[in-house]
Length: 300
Image (cartoon, rainbow, N blue to C red; front, side):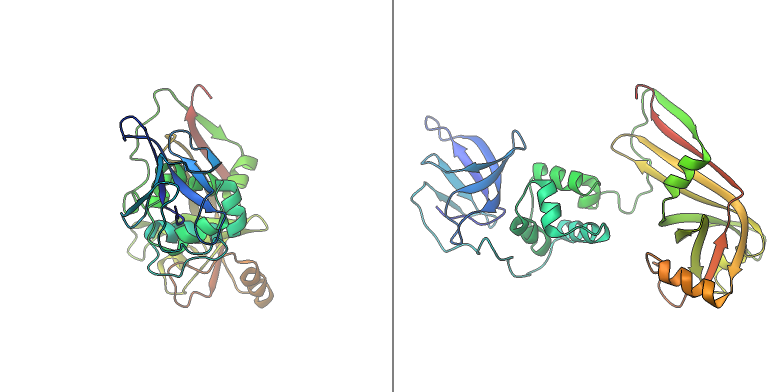
């Protein structure tokens, strides 16, 4: 018997030949793909070292099968090397991007998700179809959701999930609001358009010395807040738990023109503007008022 990372191991009943247990192979111990294997079992989500017997068969990702402990086939890729990049699937791309965004190594992410680094490399580099249990483990390891890894709801606004049966709405204090603003992210700034219409514009921002700062173009709509009192909002919605929070910062906005201050902000910036292009005008909002609310279950 030989297997590749991502194959499924199926244990059959000797009486009926029907599957009684199955799992995903998430780790190899021999370069030729022979047993034993690290298997994530679908019924328990546990990962165990398993030596297949005559009642086991391997269902390959290609759809073919091999059965019995003595069966043989073409060698599998080495357990110590990642498969060649063919056409990374969307799930693999999202996993790799989120891992890099959090500054995690492949080894650390694999340890958190209870899988081998080689299997994680396989997921990131191949159009793989990981099991639901594997997706749950990866989502937990990356502090995200299975839906996010699958790209579900990508083009839908958040908050379409079911509301809590007994929600509790709590006001947040200034210190908690500052903590939720964190150091950077994506927020929305309120702007008065040249024709007087109110407009809400998303920007990716940083927090430096208690000021909310973002980059834009001098002729872009977000730059219209300079010299005026404005509102800036950030929020987070957890669809799975039907809870979330929002923070509203209100204060004067100004353009950062001092060359040394501009260099300092540019050096501290965590990300470049998602909108791309030349956006070298820094705008600073120094909050004079911070308010927020959090929705949780009344039972928490």
